[in-house]
Length: 128
Image (cartoon, rainbow, N blue to C red):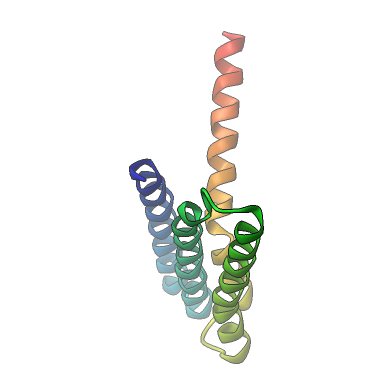
């Protein structure tokens, strides 16, 4: 469980710090809806990531049928959570929809970028 918390802290803090700096930049160049949308999407992305990690231990040691329904319920609940910023952005002019979507995918982007950097680093070390 401790390694799970470290992973959560690493990725969530990286994503939030990046989103704050980007939002600050967009607010400075007078694109407040873009900055606010990025923060909104990122916050819900972090919540989603934490919910994924919190539900993992609940699926271990259960029957296949019970695990299936727990997983299905978890996915459904997380989709509802992710719909909140999307609906908010659609109904309000205060948030940019594209930046909300970018914020929602921010954790996934950070995970892929880190993986690519590790892959490039390993490939580079093998060549030397």
